[in-house]
Length: 215
Image (cartoon, rainbow, N blue to C red; front, side, top):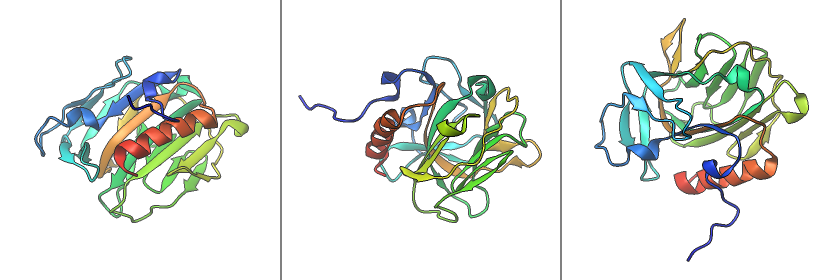
């Protein structure tokens, strides 16, 4: 029997808060509308569509992706979970609109895009601006403790800005209240842990994602 070396599934690491995996759509036909993206962590933080649902597509890896600008909301409270670790595998489909997700309230706090991590204290710019071809894996440890903060794109570290995340009652996917639906992306997998993972644990999850999505 083959043995997995230096790889762990998200549910094998302590502190899994939420886990959305587009592979769950693999059995659906392309262009099937997706009303709910189930949270497979067991904590019930499902992304529920609120307007113009995105659809299932087959991505370059051969697995399904959630494709389009459909707006989804989940009631996961990131503010109460600070510090937290987040992984997101995604691809931009539009040169301008790249928001992946933001606070439920819409305008502030935590906005993740293909080439930057925007928080209300500043922006961390990364590789990938304007790239509509390649899929990216973004890793973030958000914390009010400077020594815990991490921002990585495809496992390459960047210097993070200070994290000052104010009250967030939920998480929005492809949506900000003042601008409406502005994310146009292929979303593969999003994972959130309710603690700052160690670098050794981050490497285990990143290896799992790279292998799965052929990054």
